[in-house]
Figure (tube, protein in one colour):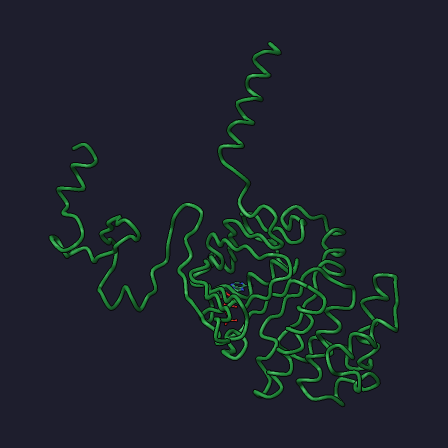
Length: 322
Ligand SMILES: Nc1ncnc2c1ncn2[C@@H]1O[C@H](COP(=O)(O)OP(=O)(O)OP(=O)(O)O)[C@@H](O)[C@H]1O
């Protein structure tokens, strides 16, 4: 009996080694096949349709996508405000689907910091900037006045310490909001359209503050944005379409100091790929396409090209053994 159990265990171990490390092992933010379905008045809206996303510790990533593509839903899940319907969501080792109410409160106070688009939603109007930054540390039972001063200085708004929100510009309020988000030394900062209500000069100052905090403190930062200035300056931009990650743009400095951006389509774990809509409509690709494996790429052709570079239907059938 014990021999059988040992064999089974050995088999399982061998199987685990064959499959290699689990998806996203070691990632700071992991979404695996994430689904969020909203039900309102009997109608279901699938806001996230099996979204996969991996973000490493210390990365600064922008999330972009058309209105309604699921960006805010994703951020609400990652911030612990919303619970996904299915899939895996893990941030800094915390499983977001298996938290108790108490864990969730602790997670939202100490593991993540959040910045909203609406400046008024980030700060309490009757407190000064410094008091706003101290508040989260007081709620966590470790009030630190020096931390507030340090953070406001780091974000270039030390001169606003004694001002209330109404006495600051929108850009200054957002930089104070970043200080509030960082007050409890979170591992991850999430920002939903942080520059959405600002003019371009203030937007640049707010983005520079977020990037500075990311570099200085090493905090993993995710920014949902429609702002091309923001998405054009991060190392990685993730595109979301119809509730799934569809593309990634990676930027790196070339040897002559210029920034080179390369766009990639995202291949999910089961090999699914979203072809860009402008490519498919240009070639009238609809339900089916032809594929051919070449030595260094895969060719994709519209269905009706029967004897073009793709294979003929008969050849496909032969391979199926018919
Ligand atoms: N609480 C809700 N109840 C019902 N449907 C919702 C709810 N929140 C979002 N949705 C729907 O889910 C989909 C994704 O919405 P989401 O707000 O995540 O998109 P978004 O990409 O952030 O859009 P935008 O750029 O306009 O903010 C949309 O179809 C939206 O109508």
